[in-house]
Length: 402
Image 1 (cartoon, helix red, strand yellow):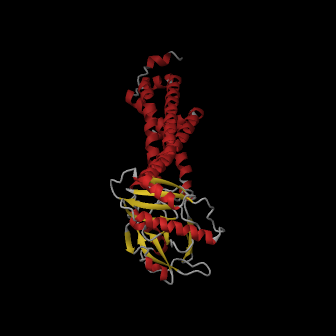
Image 2 (cartoon, one colour):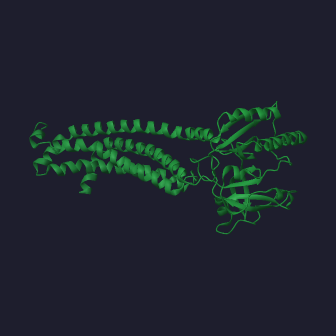
Image 3 (cartoon, helix red, strand yellow):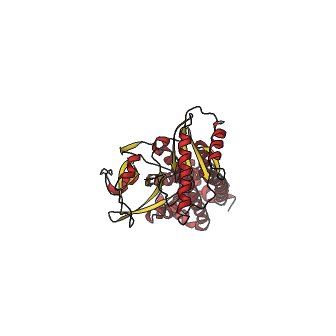
């Protein structure tokens, strides 16, 4: 039976080639949208590593470049102002704790780094933060500790890593106490003092990445100046407190500008920016599949009209309505298989060539399976009515084509 169906498909190869091509491109579109959707859903289920509730971000514009080549004395003076701000802010009654960080959660930009660990180059995201950053962000310590004031007197620079980075560097071994890469010339060695749970700076929809923290000292200028203060406010703090806080900060640095915003707003903005392409892609995919469905339905209907004689003769030789019905559906299933097979061969090159290493194999497989099921379902639905009509062709109708 299969051999006969393949022969029938081959005999109409020109028309069928267009159908296969249409199915192929539809499969690719569905695969892309489905994979992205599963990717974001899978990321949302992963641990975030911190708490954004009741955390406000104070962005500071110091009206200076603040880069590596900026005047060191000027940088030190600005850092003293930030240190004084931090003390004044922490003393306010609605604030539970405050910290300074180079990069804050949900920031669009970031700091990436690479370290040679045991002969392997490991990429990671990085941040520098003060001693109360973990307290402000509600971070979970897995082992070891966070930074503390006594770290200023150590013979090494303390480093805190997240679980992903600890696992990448040392496998199942405890990372606490181990040296963190090779120190730059003339600088102290670096040692891991603590491990926190997985930390995803860019939010719930972002992929898990390796992450490390350096201790940010307010008495020693860093290579890049901190531009944000993060504060943990008490539950129920009114929005009017923002104005009071802004006046305090502006009075301490009149020439600077400040923007105060709850992390909840930053989170919403990031969600909208990340989901916008997915929603747009979903809308495009929907209308494309609708056009494909109408096109397939039209082509199958046209094929039915052209095959009236063939189907009538089959009925005349004793074929039942159900056998004709399943013949048309089976032919469409074969065409769909060819289209899906071509699409699958193309998309499996992506993980083979490691073009999207940030997507887990389970997510990729889920997108592939969803696309297969969706295309087979669409193709079957489009073929069902024409196949039903084909099964009703009477032998007498075929005689009109003699």
